[in-house]
Image: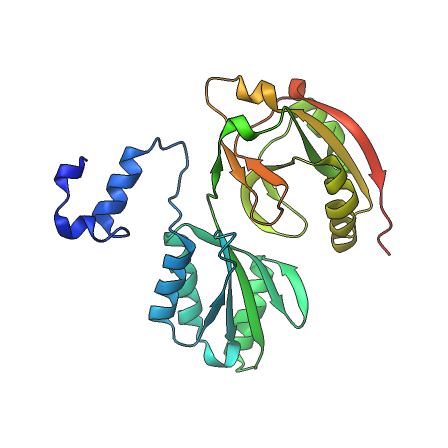
Length: 256
């Protein structure tokens, strides 16, 4: 599709179907891409259709928001429709907050919320939504060495197979990704102690990842994305071979 194929009305609607098709076709689309609409646009659509919800987000991040509602004011059909709408716009739920507990999003959490709605129980629910595809970063700003943390029980498997995109995160529900950190000190002294305590997993291993080797792989090119939950973090969507990783340190944290 060319710009000349768009009418003036199409061009004035940046999130309309014709304009979105043009934008997608003009960019290199990689395998499995689901276009993530801008955060503000998704929130606007939610508020337009559902008057019984509130949304909050940090404009500086732009790629996650919190949807808030009371189960008494929500129907099962509405909740299902909300998940369909957000999914169609390229967003997913990663965490839920209720009963003063922060919880990873799982089918069991969805079942609990549906039961509250069915039984007309009053409870304030906060659902964190994140874009399936975040801000893509230029490879030139990626340092030559990155760090990846994993529970130590997975080390032998990783040394044989390398790092593989996965959604097995103890705190969040994510599409398959590999998370990496720029800063070893921040990872081990700030992020990991908190993750260890929340996940109840004491033993962790830090891998050093040769980012320059990933940059030099021409087919397929590695794409780097900003981590919306960790200021010093990024993620990739492709495998990292065993030859590109080495064990840097193994740590045990107090989880009591």
